[in-house]
Length: 117
Ligand SMILES: [Zn+2]
Image 1 (cartoon, protein in one colour):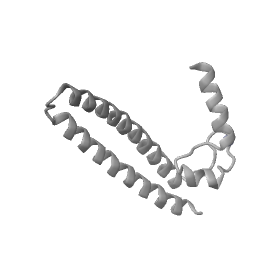
Image 2 (tube, rainbow, N blue to C red):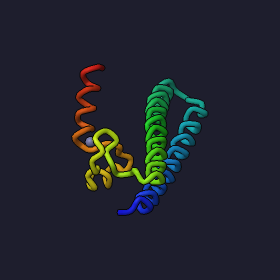
Image 3 (cartoon, rainbow, N blue to C red):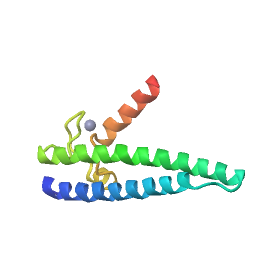
């Protein structure tokens, strides 16, 4: 696949993420704006709003990463591991288009993260 084709996929993905961020933000406003009738409802709402907040944060992080991947396409660098320079496995890119490292480097990074966290 060419960099331009990857870019189209990434842009679609970015749009999709943007839409779901919008939906979740709307739901968040809807439920936090509601006046709860019973205490039970309130804890239910709190639970859901906490969940939504973390989902929105995760989506926003992903959106930033997709944006970064789009820029890599423009530079002709998309699809190469940012750590070792090898090609990133096409299968990995199709599952997670915003991948910046190959499986091997990602696993190494994960081990390092675990070590220092
Ligand atoms: Zn690598």
